[in-house]
Length: 599
Image (cartoon, rainbow, N blue to C red; front, side):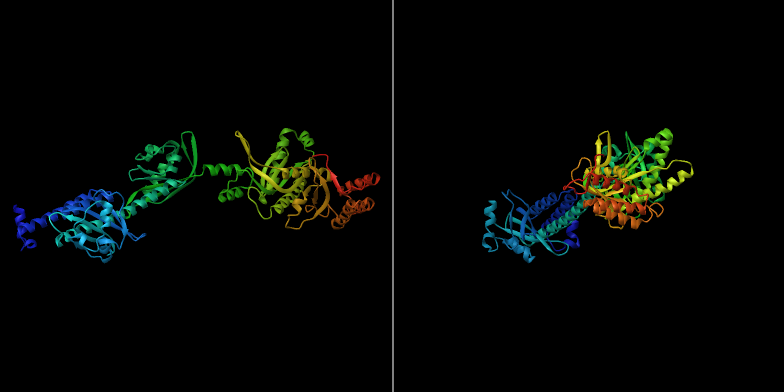
C-alpha cells in the first residue's frame, strides 16, 4: 500500500474499515473527480450524459446503463441515453416497469432477479434483444426536489447490486441532474443569444458595436448594407480605418461618446461608400457592463435615403407637412391605384397675347408670381399639385391621401384662387400692369394615380375620364363667361353651403352621356354681382322653362335676370340660345342637353 493511501486509512474518515474497503472508496472518489474533470471539458449535453452513464456503469460493474427522462406532454419515460444497440427509441408510460415504479415513488430499487420481480416488464427485452438479469434503478431529482427521470444500470458482473452500488449510482445521478440543469441554463442563454442575434439581423437599422480600443466587434446585416461591405471587411477592424474621409464625423462622435459617456445624435447626416451616398440618422450610445464599467460604444444607423428621396419627390406636388404625413402612414404612395378624387384645372385667359406684350423675361416673372399665389391656395387646403402645363395647372384633392371633405377643400381652394387673383390684379393695375383672368374646372370621379413615365423620367400623376372632364369644364368657362365651373359629381358630394347655380346639361366632346354643369359665385361681392339673390332666382326660372321647351317664357326670365344684373353675360348666352330655338324649334326630342363641339 502506498504511503499516501496508508495516511488516508489512518485518518478519521477511514478509521475502523479495512484497507480493501478504503481502497474502493478511494477509487470511487477518484472516479467522481475524473468524471467531474471530463464533464468540465465536455460541452454537448448528450456527450455529458453519455460520459455519466458510461462512468456509472463502470463504477457499478454493470453491463449497461440507461437514462430515462420524463416527457410531461405524453406522460412517458423515454431513453435519452441508452447503452447498447437499440433498434428504435424506447418509450413507455411513466407507470410501467421498474423505471416507472422508481419514477413515481422517488425511491431507488435493487432487483437481483429481474424476471422474478412483478414490476419488471419482459417486453423491453423483446424490444432490445437483451437479457436482463439484475437491475439497479434510482430517481433523477432536480434542485427543486422534483423527479425528472430515472437512471438505471443492468446486469452487475460478479453478483447482484448492493447498497453501496445504489449509493454510488445516486452520487453519479446527482451529477446527471446538475448536467441537465446546466444544459437547460446553457440552452436558455443560447436561445437568448440566438434571439438577440436574430433580432439584430432582422432590424432595418444598422447596429454596430465598438469596443474600448476602437475595434468594430459586431455589425448586423443592415449595417453591412449601409457600409457596402462584408462582415470580414469590418469585424475586428479599427473604426477609424472604416469611417474615413467624408465619414470621419462618425469617429468623432464615437470618441465624444466614449469620453462623455453621453449619447449623441446626428440627424439627416451623409455617409459615402464607393459611389453611393446614404442619408442616415445616427445615434451613438455608451456601452456599460453590469458592474458599471465602460466596455465601448454602440452606433445605430437609420437609413432614410429612400424616405428622403420620396419626401423630396412628394414635396414637388404638395405641402411638405402632407408629405411627412404620407411617409408616416407607411403606404406605397407612388404605386398605381384607383381612387376617388376631385380634380382641379386652371388656365390663364388670353395668355398668348400677354406673352407678346411682356416678352420672355416678363412672362417667366409673371408666371412665377401667379403660380406662387395659386399653389399657396392649394396647399392651404391640403391639395396635391400634379403639374404645370404652360400657363395651366392641374391639381387634385383626395390623392394620395383622402379626406372626408375633399370636394369642399377643392372648391374652397378654387374660390380662394379667384379671390386672391382679384387682389393681385388690383396691385397690378396700381402699378400700370394689365390684369390677369383665369378659369377653373372641378370634377369628382375615380382616377388612376401613380408614378407614370419611362425609366428615364417618371412623374407622379393621374389619368382617366374624371381628369378629362375637369379639363373640359375649365375650357368651358370661356363659353359660359364663368370663372369656376364644377360638375354635378362634385356638387352632389359637397358638405358645405355655397352660392351655386345650375347652368346647363352638356355632352362634352368625345362623350355621349350628359353631365350637369354648375357655376360657383362665392367669390363675388355686391359690386361685381348686384342683386344676386333675385337675379339667380330669375335665372333658375329661365333654366327650368328652357329645359321644358318653353323658350318664350325662358327668354323672358333670362331678360329679367339681365335687368337685375347687366354684368351677367351667361344670361346673355341663354337669351341668344332661346331666340335661336324660337326661330328654329328643336322638335319633340328636345331634352335640354347642349352638345359641346370644342374641348
